[in-house]
Length: 331
Image 1 (cartoon, rainbow, N blue to C red):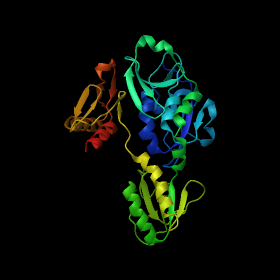
Image 2 (cartoon, rainbow, N blue to C red):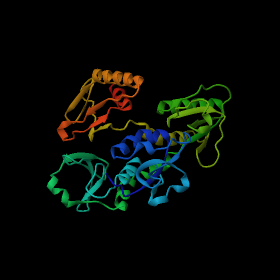
Image 3 (tube, helix red, strand yellow):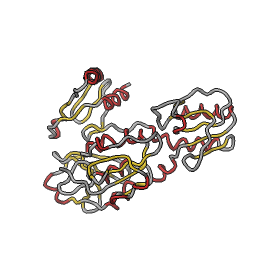
C-alpha cells in the first residue's frame, strides 16, 4: 500500500476541486470516499492526511490548515498541491517528482515503462521513456525544491484572481456587463431594474442558481463586505475592472486532457487520440449512452482496459465527465 509523506492543504472552490484535483488525487491512490462535502460554493480548505490518515482527503476548518504537518499553499496552485500530495516513501510511485543530479525535475507518469515528464522552468512538458536501469541515478527532491519550482510565476497571478464586485449606475453596469460576457463570463440572472452592482459568484445568490461557476456573474444590489472581493467603482475604474477580470480569463481556458499520461490530441477530424489509441466521436457517444443506461439501472459500472502499449494491464472505470470533456473539445 502506498505511503504518503507530505500532507498538504489549500483553499479551493467546489468547481476547482472537481475540475483540477479530484481525479488526479484518485489516480495517486487517495481515497475519494473520505472527502466531505463542502459547506458552500465559496472558498473551502481541502487537505490530505484527513483525520491523520495519510491517504484520505477532505474539507477541513481553515484553522486546521497547518495541522498534522500539512504544508498550507496560500494561493491557488493545483500543480503544487498534487506534486506535494504525491510525495511517497519506498519505491518511486506514479505522480511523484524526482530529480536527476539535483538539477532537473521530472514527474513520473508511468512506472511500468518508466515514462517521465521533464518539468522545465518555462512550463513546457516533454514526456519520454527512460532506461529502468538508470532510475537508481534519480532521487527525491526536497519539499522546498518542489515548492520553489511550482510557485514561480504562479503566485502573482493567483493572488490577483480574487472575486470582484463592480459598482456604478445602471447604464454603466450594462455596458461593462457586455464587455465581461465578451471576455468569457456567463450571465446567470436577467439584468433588469435599477441595478447597483455586478458581482462574480457569491453565496448570497443561492436562491438563484445552485451550480455556480467561477465564470458566473450576477447583476443586482449586492454590497461586498470584508476582503473577500476586489471592488471597483464606475466610471473611473472601468478599465481597471476589465483588467482584473482578465486575470480570470486564463483560468477559464480549457486545460489539457490527460489520459493515462498522454495529452489527448484532436488533430484527426471527428476523433481523439492519445498514445497509440484513437476513438471517434461516434464511439464516444455510444459509450456515453451505455454509461447513462447503466447509471439508470443502478449497481453497474463500465470499466475499460488502459492502453496495452505502455504496459498497464489493470482496468479503470470510465467516467461520464471525462467523455463530456472530450465531446466538448470535438464540437
